[in-house]
Length: 259
Image 1 (spheres, rainbow, N blue to C red):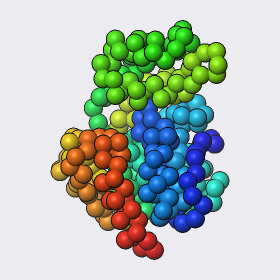
Image 2: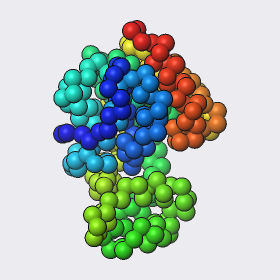
Image 3: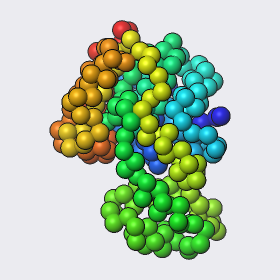
C-alpha cells in the first residue's frame, strides 16, 4: 500500500508522524512546518483508511506496521524516528517492536501499549448513519452530526474528513472498515518484543489515557523510555499545548541525536 504523505524540509534525520483515529496528516501541519522541520526531515503520513491514503478491508496493528515498513523502504528512510499520537502511537510502537532495525527513536503521544475501552463506538455509529452525498453543504452535515455529537470541537475535527469534488461530499476515511476493526484498534499490542532504542512517551496531564501504573508495562517493552507529562493538555496534546509539546519533542531529538 502506498501511503499519502506531506514532506516538510529536505535535510536532517527522517521523522515520520502518524495521526490518531479519524485523523489525518494535516492534524500535524503546523508543528511539522515550524518546530519539527528545524531539527528533522518530516514526513506526515495518512494511515490506511484515513485521509488520502487507500482504503482496504484489513486494519490491525501488524498490518499498519507493515504499511509503515513499506513506506520507510520506498523512501529509503531507515532508520527513522517515529512519532505517533493515539492510534498512531500504537502503530509506531508496533513498528519499533516488530522491526527495530527500521526505527531509530520512538515518540508516543498519549498512548500506552495496553487495551482501551471502546470510547468511540457511538461516534463511529453516528458517522456510519450519515451519507455525505445526501447533503448539499457542510452546515447540513454538521447539523446532522449534532444530533448525536454535541461537542462542536469534535464535529469540526470530524468534518475535516469531508471531500468535495464540486458536486458531492464524501468521507475520506473508510468508516465501514474502521468500525469493523474497532476491536483491533482498541486492543493491546500483540507482541511481547522489546525496543532498546531511545523512547519518549508524552501524556496530557488532563488525560486518562496513560496512568502512572502504565509505566511498568511501557518500560517492559521500551526499557529506555522516558515519560513526560504536559499538565495543561488533554488527549489532543498537539492541539491543547503545541508549544510545550514542540519543546519536549525537539529537546528529545536534539539530546538523543546519534544515540
